[in-house]
Picture 1 (tube, one colour):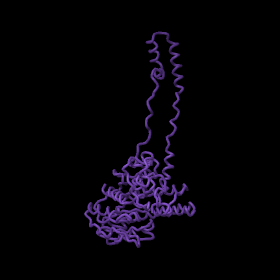
Picture 2: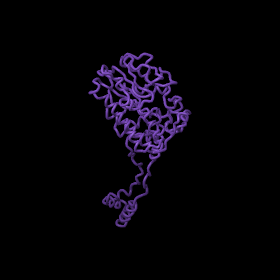
Picture 3: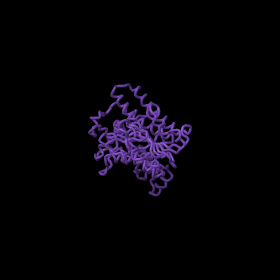
Amino acid sequence: MYILVILLLACAEKSQDLAAEDPGDTALTEADADVDSDTDVDADTDADTDADTDTDSDSDTDSDTDTDSPPDTAPPEDTAPPMSDYELCFEDIGDGAGAGIGPDYDAFTPTIGSHCSGTNHQDIVDIERVVFLGDSVTVGTPPTSPGDFYRSILAQQLADAFTLRPPAGAWEWYNVLDGHALMQDSGDFCASAEWGARTDDLMRDDTQVTDCFPEEERHKSTLVVMTIGGNDLNSLTQGFQEGKSHEALWEEVFGYMALMRESVEWMVDPANIAGDVYVIFTNLYEYTDGTGDVESCWAAEIAGYESITDPALEEMVLWSMEEFMSIAVDTNTDMLFLLEEFCGHGFNYDDPDGRCYRGADAELWFDLTCIHPNPTGHQAIADMFYDVVME
């Protein structure tokens, strides 16, 4: 589950720190007094004509000449650094240029795609297989129809783009008994994602990765697509509610992100998989549009979602989000900007005063569970993944 309501609560606090600094002292300097003094000396010394006075002034210092010029009233130059590609992509949300909306991704110098859907670290070509890993966002959940899951939409898009064998219709469905896709393998596609999965289910405590990489398939050029991390964050928030120590909770954060990194590193290591492997994963979205208004979704109270005010949770979540980007940069893989793209399509999407308001035509992208995408949201995710693949 994606219980990321504190992420943009943190952003709201961060934006307050971006208030403009004092413009500084604009009073006139003592140079004005010096100017008057120099002029008086010239007048006393030379009682001649104006021309003589001008001659004396010319032979004087440059400061005397400057006394005849009006004060410089030109506005100060704009010394603000140019916006990064990431900031340019999201200058319409947050407080302008995406300022203060959350993670500092620019610290990792990522390459941002021109589409703004995610990074552009890989030249993805000649795909022979597609693997879907992760959690319930990738498996798909009711009430959305299986044909509207992003997994189903993207599979068809990729089958057309790379001339792959498309999956059967049953592959699009979920198994309500175990939370997996009804069929793991179909056509040139594999799906081992699972409802409720966390990063430890990729390789340590489960076998999602190896299930879709049997020995006989490891020579093929493979694209890996996944959504993961939301359930780890849910576990973290529960730890705060249970009163666990900050030290124990930080260990948990470091642990689940280390498992994410290890899984990606394993997949892209040619010692493990001989064929080319391209990996795309997402950051994490939230449904309050940066407001932290947990109750904006009517089912939140029933589901037991609540805000955590301890600032340590903010620090842990922001670190996790930045670590996703760090993994993408370090492993030359790609990350989708799910948080940024979904901001303005949560349950405050129609609030014109909202920090992520996108206009009167904006639509809700979440379903009645608060945390899963509706058909429009699934389409958006599919299109974002496809953007990253095709550029």
